[in-house]
Image 1 (tube, helix red, strand yellow):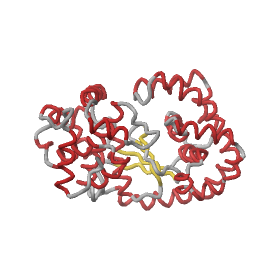
Image 2: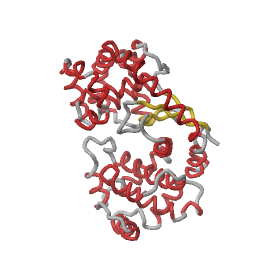
Image 3: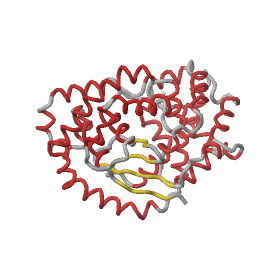
Length: 354
């Protein structure tokens, strides 16, 4: 049985709050109390508002980068010199580049040098400005007690879900998770996103019910569900399919699933997590969910979910082998995706987005 570490961290809440400098209507509505408490602080720095909006338009909002940076720092307190060191010191920025460009392949070398690295000193300035102008006191007084209470509420349901065991059964021995535990950081400023962190950890909004946390954990801990090299090969093979192209173009603006590899990896992970979430009783209407989530763009997720639900894993020892079989048997072949996709929705009596 896997163990849940339930935690919160000032650094992730600081990162999440900085997203409010985008002045996005959605984020303001989701985090109205925090925004209204610091609206004067935000309005008094139009340069930081411009920075945040520009980043969001380019597909890299402040929260995404700041959470990624802070995840590399083993410090959960409020020492800004420690937290900002990776953004401010050129030699330390190389550590970030090595992890996110070379190891995780989250961005290309070109995007790193043109769109990410130049912004790090400005983001450090943003973080220090927010921290030094009342946010830390607000967090201690208003946020921390609520987070402690929420963790107490989560302790009982957490003991009921063997996340690691379920994931390992699906991924197979070659891709087993190394630890028999999952770490959940809850935050008042995470919505609408859940975020994967290092070492079987993830970040999610404290207001969500624990069943939502289980579904997010299933998704985030499976990235990538097997070799990224093989996922990229399959993505390039499928890329000429008209349904895949249509779905790729229908994604929300500024999506991070902006390459064939990233898009297919997300599709495969989504299909696998939706199947496990249904099996574990934390997702009631999987096809409806897939039709609505991210503008219904995860069309390969539907095909994979259907085959998993139909018992394809009875024949194979890993998700990788099952997906390889779907390529061989014609399910994942350019030109075939739309018919199979629509048949699944028609049989279920759910309207297909495409």
